[in-house]
Length: 508
Image (cartoon, rainbow, N blue to C red; front, top):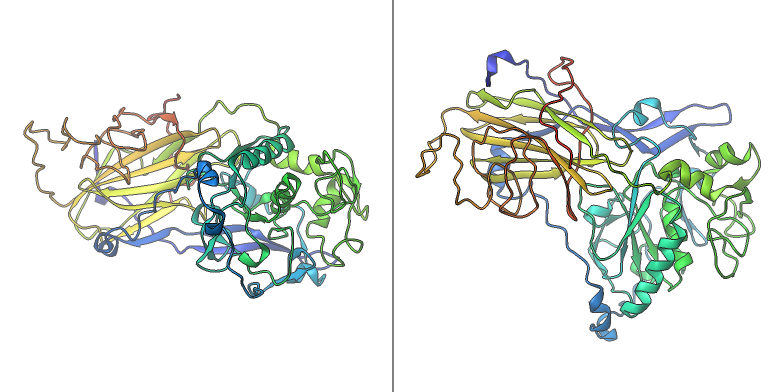
């Protein structure tokens, strides 16, 4: 059934990302990672169509550990670099990188994010998590952390980060040790395959030197501090030495753990063997280690160990974030609003599309793909978790909008909406198919950035494989894959609260 444009109330919005801020008796508390975006992502479709790929995500480059045994050491060496400079608002204290407000004691991270932030799909606890161990290096860009886009607060901009200076066997030994460190948590450790951009993950750059980052003095590893309880979910950390404990420590820094005492603890500077995350309240190490101002998540630690205890319970905090390692067998549910398989609009119309996504664990991500007449015009991850897209100035053609969600068990689920704008030219199909499908096409009824889409398909929520040749199932379906995409936020469309759809949903 087609919905006419005059049956819709079309709204627009403005996207604004603001950190949660709360006043407290002991000084201002703030939460720079618990951002909440309002309004919709806005796109002028004339610009999008003319840009020819500007709004299409680049493919994920996959790792290859075998290069560690074939690449000569001379090709891995870091070029000498002058000491770096951190972005405005960040300071280095010894080997710790901290937000200036925290280091100077002017602010503290709020131990409880605002309820509105926790209500955003993907932010809930417990959540499943993913760590990607990167031994192959790559080109990094400066900016707020986004592991999927190789952006890092601590990166030298457009600097080629070097390949790990060790063998594949050494890398596998480190990988196994990190897996053991995290085995009691709902976290997977990837190294042969890099996750899709859709699902949030922490990336650890293993190898290189401190001078390959923008810090100003030597360190064994470094991570951006104060992301308490891993509220950002897309951090990039660095381990410069060949110690698995350093890798695990830097990863845990990105999740909100600070340094403690104890030669058997991963979070300690003290030398020792068989280090592990502690399951008791262990003394923090501030003045004795890197100096005052180096504890970033003190108020969170007090939840588990008591006010003014100056202690941290590693596993209690990590278990709150990631839970336990039981399998996630339930895929997300995904629905596009407005409801209906096909919408008809006039040329030049605008439309706002929203997403209704739910998952049984936090950590879900989502992306949107838009094609016109079978050609992908837009394919972007909703990193800000807005869950709304405003498309203006729609030109003549058949548009297919695919909303795709992915969780950490590689369940990928889609829903699809077809928009017919104006009177598109009839497809050149010898079979005379009014929906434009052709049995000889590389892809049928599904939008994918690597294959062509059959224009004008009106079937619901197709689930596709990542390459050409995927079949249109005629329903929202989930799949397991190494490269997936993400799910969206439960939001109403057009100012109307619409009933949750049970249609177009199928489980693997």
